[in-house]
Length: 165
Length: 174
Image 1 (cartoon, rainbow over the protein chains, first blue to last red):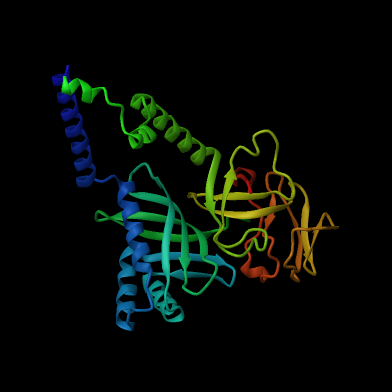
Image 2 (cartoon, chains in turn red, orange; image 1 turned 90 degrees about the horizontal axis):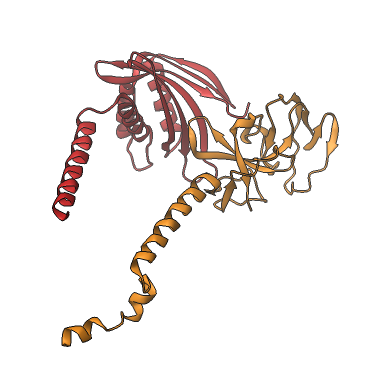
């Protein structure tokens, strides 16, 4: 009995390891998108310790997450406009980094809906931004369209969502 | 003989307190407790931490509370209820607001006071009044009008609006 039990346990461990290895080597599109967005949150964050050069470098890395003709539609109190293209987005990112000394961006909730072809996805996410010294944190729902280009998932469209509207 | 005498010794007080006289039964109890706690705190009484000042002074920044997800099982949300409103992507972050307008009503603010269907509404919970001016807004048949208690904030800096019924996750417990 004990022999069979130990064999069963060893087999279960091997199956679990194989499953884990498969998931690591061949992640699902959803896992890749989630990983990409968590990287984006890190790159979009910056601290007051970062120098001007580091901030500019981080802002330029930000461009790697978007398609060249990305469309960002902002409709929030105090800012209602559209950003067209990666260059304009980078300018806005650099501008934001000079306006605020420090920012921590997080995406606590991400909901991915893949298209049938597994080449595009609609992503609903909750974005939070914390600025040191401010009592309230900034909360915004976003809807993104991501496209797969050369094994990389890039953001093609971003629009703000009004939850309480 | 000596071995038997050792085996007959009762377990130490510490072991008895920690795992009891019957370890199997203790294990079952622990499993049941963990399972019940998981279900209760995941689906029934969801713990939350309040962040922000829009519900001051009723709910202070960094306070801890619970969302009663079963509160609206047998009746619909009522005016004055403080509710948690979920977002589309998930429930790790939710809005905490008070219901002031019910489906089909019109909500307006004049000189900081709330008007429902054109009639003044007394709001004893508002301790930080403001001077909001907002044109009458029609609440949809599947919507509620929610707002925070802190009216001392500027209108633009305060999140308020008309979430759909399905977005209301539950009622704040305490």
